Length: 375
Image (cartoon, rainbow, N blue to C red; front, side):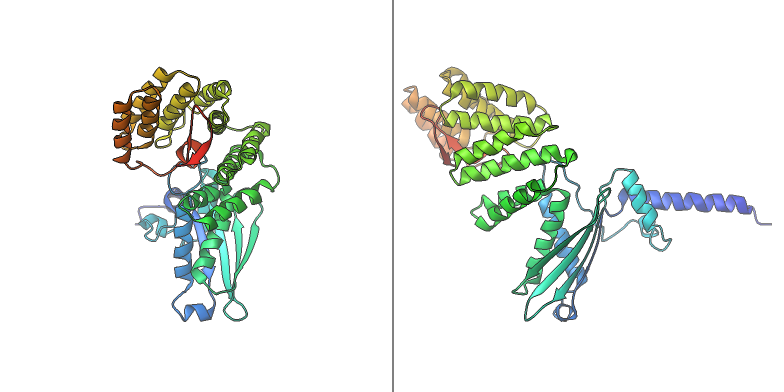
């Protein structure tokens, strides 16, 4: 006699379905992606799978590393778990998606097609679906038929709908390595989002985009535009203390450059308090370094020297604290020690790349005479 009645079997089947769907929701893909490519590209070996891998790689690069603004990492598993792989044949895809939304996962659905145009030109149509938002369409063309570049651009525009700041930030950091096209893309991304309707949930992201535009204005030696961009943040309601702290610290740095030491001290105190919880790599050491510059600008060379030495102890591999300390010792008349610190600076390379949020990591300031110059 069969040991289970029908009710028990139905119960066990329901439990199995629940386990499969729950596991797939927790560990499954957060990016559902499909890209169709035209036959003429497939014949060259550039099929849909290749396009999807390029799209995924570009998306992952955009959200690589830590940032003030969190962004969901697109996850597409080429080797799903055994339980997760059962979701498709059991037709649980919609249930998995609903569970992911319930669990708070930012599940992104992207359907795209690449179309052949006249001559070598290619056109890409993308439909992007995000939880709680109306689906959006993207259209772009590539006259020269460069399919990989077209896919990478499509990925960037798609991710700009998810987290415009992270897209602008990634291009800004790439642009700092003498890549003007990336800086142009960073500006375009920031301007495009800031022209969109107000979204209260993205107040901090809007604030950080203004901060990023200020950094790029400084690269163009346009201090008034930089200060205006930073000032706009005060008009945005609901900005996080982290973002407000970053902006105040940058305003303190510019106040030093403008020879307004008292303003610099007040802004630094405000920014240091608001940004105290930021745990980005090397961020708090840069705050220590900025504090030294503020103290020096206000004539407290002893406090400035102590802070420079503290910054050196926190990160011995960075040349910038040694450089500033060398100038301070020379201004104080200690030529031999100034020469030692200058040698220390020349013997070191920056420990990390420039920060995307603090002007201090990209520019040097003269705490006495004012003014900025690129590091």
